[in-house]
Length: 424
Image 1 (cartoon, rainbow, N blue to C red):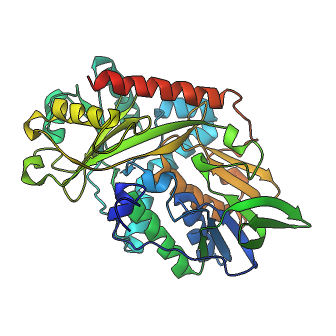
Image 2 (image 1 turned 120 degrees about the vertical axis):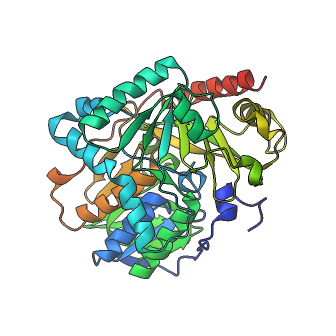
Image 3 (image 1 turned 90 degrees about the horizontal axis):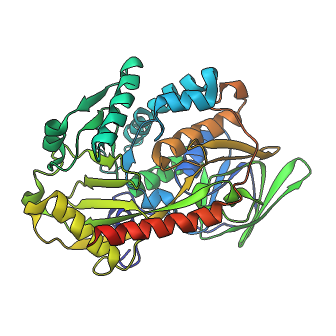
């Protein structure tokens, strides 16, 4: 694949091979899975390991949506602090969700180790950095909660965080030792390889066009054939279309963009020497990380405006790098891309049963790596007799957000204005 054809840096640089295969005629399976990202592939892997026949269909290529465009931070739990999760999910599901999803990174890393997935994995933590004094106060509150729960999360002051990141821009930070970073496309392709090895089937380059019941079975009509299944899992998250009415209206789409420099070499050795991923407390979130090849990746909410070599986002990225790491001097960029995040009104993910034996886990709010992986395991459990009372959060009815398209446009306008302001 040429860099020009790649959907992201991760697509161009992943060590795991891409997998593409057509649908070879009509098929019948236990589980049909729509979407070849973290959720769909994890579902296929776990279903196959439990003895179910599973078939993934992907309209484009493996990892084409948010999975292959991800920042690559393997974070624990949610953006929400534990207290908010408990308030919204209650005394039963709240602590359960926090505990299970606090172990999300550990589970992702265990799959990487088990299946020897080549994805540039680090396990040195992530840093939630304070963009200002108010951000640091917020992190202090979060730290108290994590300490009460006995989790390995440290609160660091400005000087300590400056040494970890290589800039004195931030006012302190939380270091979450449960977490790490990966090449997300490498991980996605590795999940596909593992799923195929377990006996699942994957077909790419075909779109599901119609979904309907035929007696006790589901028919998934595609552009290249029909899949008949006892159950269906829609693993499309922020890239849902009109296959199921109203599904793409239950969340607000937030775009998130990244630019990656060319490998920088020794001059970048003082920047994130531990290669932790950084995300900040700003209302319009910002991130920075250094990959295994000494590229610096920097990004924020919004779309790429322009090109990796010119345009607004290019100017924004150069300005931010000069502000954070002035010793680097001018840098050149290798890739620029953006992806979509499905944001729910309460910032919690969902599990919906849209109809008998038709499920969708959705609304990951920017935590796709761990959430998609763990919900894939959950889907396999549901389809093999898991008691629904043991779910990590309650199954809920689908509820649309009428203002979602308008809110997406308003957010995008604000994010573009933010790029303009910070590119000056």
